[in-house]
Image (cartoon, rainbow, N blue to C red; front, top):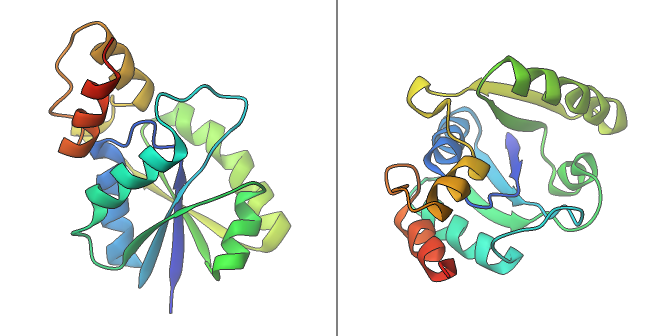
Length: 158
């Protein structure tokens, strides 16, 4: 079985993430969406909320499951899961330049390869940070996030 990991904090998950996950599911027998937590970051949603929203959003994509990544290195998580690849979406050259050193380190640590999938042009400007900023300033983000995420964002509105 060819297994890949799509990692991310998904705070929040958006349609750009889902598009990459769906494309990865066509390339691999199983895709594990690894919801990560970076303890140096401040999150809008708890890990449990991010897991729940992500599970709901990917429920109709065959061959995809969602797991918490836990503490530790992504390369180690991939080894524990029996994954041969990491799949990352790339929006632009800045993303590529940021991701390549991590891909090289992950390959060095455990031999896991990283596959980069270019973002669809309609989503190349979308980021979780931008979605939160637009939402917080009263903008409509419904076109960029699944319903479960929009409902989650609405619950955070002060």
